[in-house]
Figure 1 (cartoon, rainbow, N blue to C red):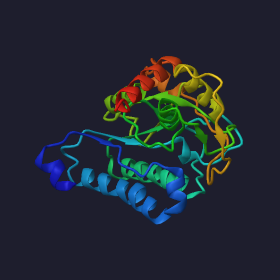
Figure 2: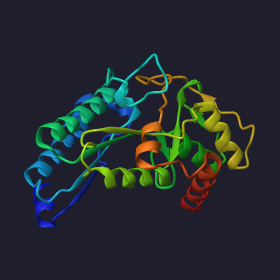
Figure 3: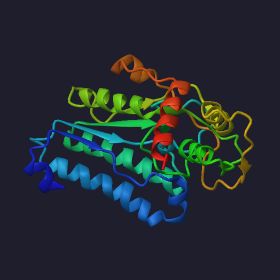
Figure 4: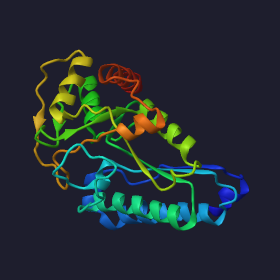
Length: 257
């Protein structure tokens, strides 16, 4: 890592590498902590060593860093109280990032978002790619949960835009070590997302097989993005229907053969 930063004179670092699946974290906590916690300090330590080169660092975190909360939506003032392995790994990611920012004056900012969807996601256990693949193949879709879990969803294009907005502010005084939430601020249940996918795919009314076996997942969580709108001038540009249409077209092309 240090060799890469020094050898290529890297001035901007986007830390996106992580184990991102809640179920995997529940089954393999040690590997998740190694990836998400140790991986974070490895990146930030390399940036600290070559602090004269690195001008901005964007750390991709998650709404899971807040853990389960009574008050919704989560704001950036909501405490980081992860309990399950994946949540703890993201809480630690954020705390380590803040520590490096405040102790070593590293230009770190933290992005927290909910569920990301869009072309390129090949994790078929997620609701959007999994549902589209089943529908394209003419198979019965499967829901891991009971369909009532509440989340916010952002298209990958809006997430990329959020990361770029954040990176532009990382080297400005007063911002280092801060977290920013990114959300469309319209929470939806898993079943609502499933039905929207079916509608976009031209298969409305398709009945899913509901397994109701989600483990280690918070039931309701969604974010307030006021800070990002006001301080970063960021806003959502891809609505859910348009985003799902783009995504369905991508999977249709991918699975055509």
